[in-house]
Length: 446
Image 1 (cartoon, one colour):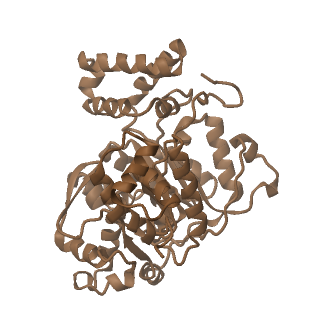
Image 2 (cartoon, helix red, strand yellow):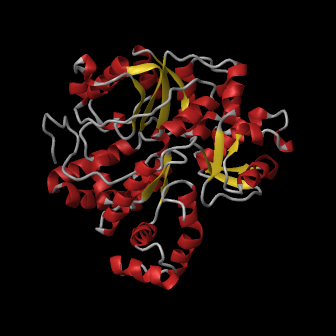
Image 3 (cartoon, one colour):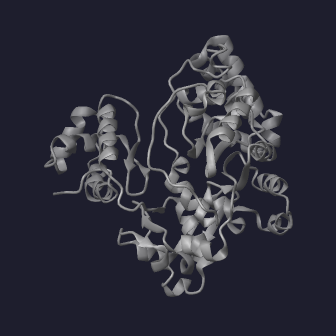
């Protein structure tokens, strides 16, 4: 385990696995903040630097330009208090007025029961080394659970969390649990720290959590609705949901839109259905508080309007009879379907070439054995999940666009002999590849 002063207690002995988090993209954050009635900043350039938080917090004034977005996932709960203060200093120095800071972290009270689990895994790794220690630590925890250990009896969800942990690869678990400073945070403390650097909490980057009717137990909604103080209200919500992870949106010098400005901002938003979206009917959403049913009369008109797989503006959707004079209902329906992965905001005329070049590099690396499971989709400013078979099929088609059917499967099997599902490759050809073309992940067919 690496615990040098340079890493400040964070585990660095194992490469971090590749993940994509849609909530960190500017397109997602703009859409979510706009739905909440806040004006947001744009983004048209990206540069890369590598520095420690402490170095950047005290860097020269021209080390960074004024920033539209500062986003962190898997950071705040894993770094020392000194580094958390450095992060806030960075936000204070470089986030623009109107800029967005998205802070994702393990939260109280839902993650609190895992603190003892984390200590077991970390101590096991100290004794035996990272990978063997994780295995022995997980065996110990499983034995305690199966043997009726009190914490698992009192907190039944902890057993489910252990099951989820055991399904993850060791490289992920090492970064998740072996650091010295792992700590679920209280939302009130994060809101206070952000307020100290001029930022206001405006909502969650998980859109469902901004709609109390579908994210809070019915009996708790009225009680929580009477709380005026933001920190107290969000703490109560975390208790009501037994929240394990938060994705907070904070805005520098926040200036909420007027009702007229809010309506105008909503009207120009454009949405598109994502691959696999239902065409209509009643829906069931699996939420933090359990299954929530979505009425067909609320969601079907929206899904049917987008089933052409072409973008539609909010203003167009508002002309549907189901939403006439009910812009608030349409806004909530869009946010719920956004959260559920059925639709996504669109970008106007993006340059697809950089994303397509990135995708070629990703599936080339997948062909060489790297574990990449996403492709960039410039039309939505985000990414789409991709199976290993899909990545290898894309790599094969990039070399020979004429491959189809059995020939495509044969080309994929040259790269990975364990891929044998012809039906999955057929679905890739008929559904996935055209969707990737439509969303700019690959060039359109000639």
